[in-house]
Image (cartoon, rainbow, N blue to C red; front, side):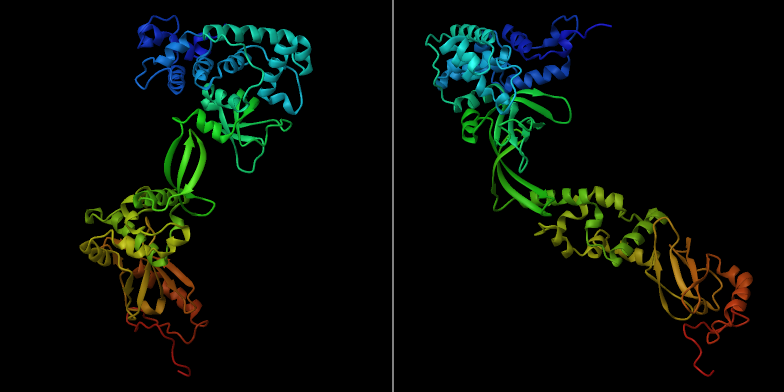
Length: 494
């Protein structure tokens, strides 16, 4: 057994920043005992770009060079370098020291245990009143001294000679932390106290006893990544206006057209976003038609074809086309199977979706006409020839054929209407025999067959014996070959 090499598990952002400052553009050009993991390197590069230490080409920036000079993680170095613009260098150094050293309030419980600002107050109390001031907040005086020493070193490196002030702008705490942890900005989920979404898209939650659990925005400085959601162990409240002031270049405005499952309708909005967080929304008056159609098609694909207004005529047409395409591929009929239709909505359905923005609007669609439009005129004619909707039986009746893809079509017809017919009817220009459901006068199946001739020869006599007494008003001739086919019963009294 052995421990994993540190390079395999460490945060590589400090290493990558150092190497880039040295002029190393390709990390893999160096000789390593263990090469840095590509995924961890990619994460490090993304973070350094977000912290403005590297440009989009991966070259070090002026801000990145200033960050390298500080013996701190790039997150904290970025915060301290940028704090000068807000005259908050001393406060930034205090925050960085608090985050890099042992927690002053380790072991404290209660509503304020998760509040980062309480650590700043304890440090300032120690700076003013020594150990007594620290203990008044439940802080460890020795830990306070360590934090103060580190903060002083960083102030010195930054050339900040002014003595730190105890009266500070509380809104600056959230702003400064946002510079260090832009990916850990947390937005409270609607109606869910204590549950948040982070700017990086992950979920997070606060313990029920934390006094910050109803804040709309937080900066999570310490996360426990166990479980489905991270637990926020330490955080600072953050006002939306301060967030917008801290990261103006990272906030984008997007026009969003999407399907809303709750209202079953298209929603078009202009959104102000920070990563995965939506900071504000406003209605979008005239969304592009193609974006509305794309969102609608996505919703239909997710809900399935059954959300469309299928009629029996549309399903019958689909079954006829799919069946004839299977029986006679040389006809070149289009694929109208459910699988193809669902996978190619943009090809056959999109042109018919003008002015449809809600689920109930789908009822306007004429699916039979839409499917029929997929066939050219010649193909429609061949469909009627090869897979007709009805057959004329010897009695003169037009009987509907029922099509099921992969099976022979079914013709349900009263036995008496087929007197004199020897051969089983066929479709697809004689290739496919029809499955006959021979019915009694009460429309109940007597026999299912594709061999009508065999039925007359071997089975009819038995059927005649069984049903003649039950249905005396209907003809049961001894010779069905020469009997007159009829759909009617004998007149009463005859």
